Length: 318
Image 1 (tube, rainbow, N blue to C red):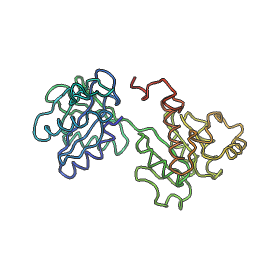
Image 2: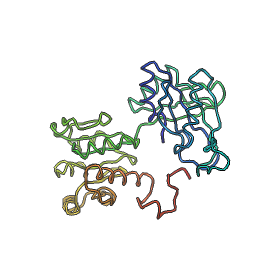
Image 3: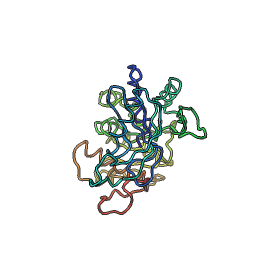
Image 4: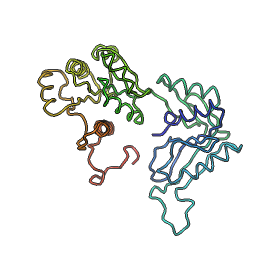
């Protein structure tokens, strides 16, 4: 979902530069669609924009509406039809449901500051926008408003500060996960390879996990290739409810790992070798394989090819 969390760096950067921004939010839809209710586009006064409300078939229309609000028109709730600009004989997109899009100036300073603080601290906040004119912004879940609930992100703990951990962390930034890289080796953490979005922790993983236990929405992957580090993490996390626990390595390495961990409570939940069978070899392809397995598990899917399946392409959209 492309909600406030995804567009906020864009909104905040323009706000700090003194440029106006308009937010367009998908608040209703009649018929099928490619994006969930609540998705947001942010359109700035310099003509740039970020986010999406569809697969690309209504964004131009939304930018036009946003431009009018940027020019001084009042906030509005507008109907938008995919393919509405086409001639009668031209084929319309398959996602042809009528959309209801709420277009408002970005929130005023008190709401802006509250959103910024909640996202910076991974805190909890309800942000509402009235569904009647003047479509004002509100903090809290109030009647007659479209409310987005900002909640702490699910954690993805990577044990081992490796090049693969850096690549996974960079890719996971787009998956709504808060990435924590744990490694007791100072030199590995100081490599400079890791994205600013990842938290770096110099601790033995079992010690850190005892103070920061994972829940059933969290995930942990061991990547250090050092049994002294990885096994400590696995013994600790498998005893708890973490939803995804995986270990990097070949099948031979995993057999050795299972022998070392024989009798560990929860060992049947350990996924190894980590990842889906994509046949990839490089760092990027390996990271993609592992994150693809995590996403599939999040949505109760198998990771099979879409062309051979029958379930909706996007879980939860119908």
